[in-house]
Image (cartoon, rainbow, N blue to C red; front, side, top):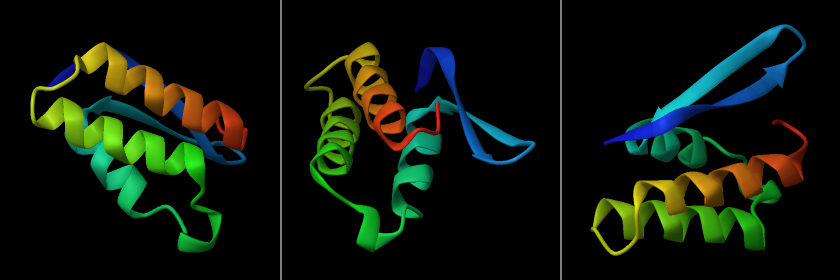
Length: 75
């Protein structure tokens, strides 16, 4: 399932990645360091699972991801 628009994330200086699907979102969230996981991380994980299971829209899952990466300063 693809997002209507990619979420661009700046991982390091000069290194960007784009999250374009639920699969990309899952991979990004799974690699997030455990010591940096907080409430917004949990919200993004739950949104991913809810979208995967059809309980919320792809747009809602994307917005949860955007909220999370904005808070981390990676957007």
